[in-house]
Length: 75
Image 1 (cartoon, rainbow, N blue to C red):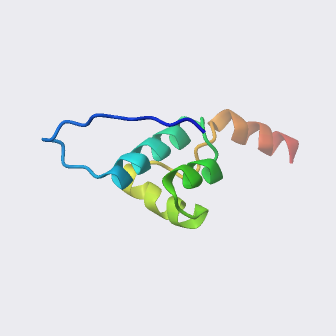
Image 2 (image 1 turned 90 degrees about the horizontal axis):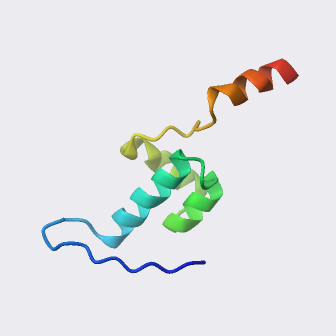
Image 3 (image 1 turned 30 degrees about the vertical axis):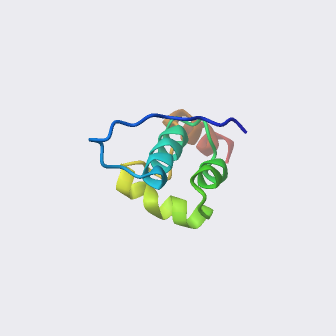
């Protein structure tokens, strides 16, 4: 796992947990991390991470619509 050090300006009122959750939710939204990977990054269970996604305007259903179409066709 990579380690990243960030210098956040003092005038930004955010703690490290919130910052990690923002990063994890965005990477999940972009499809770069699975739900489990994003939850691990955030230090949460999958269920808790999934429940918190709403606060970040991220849908738990992040698959592209083309995947849904192919799933229906293959059913």
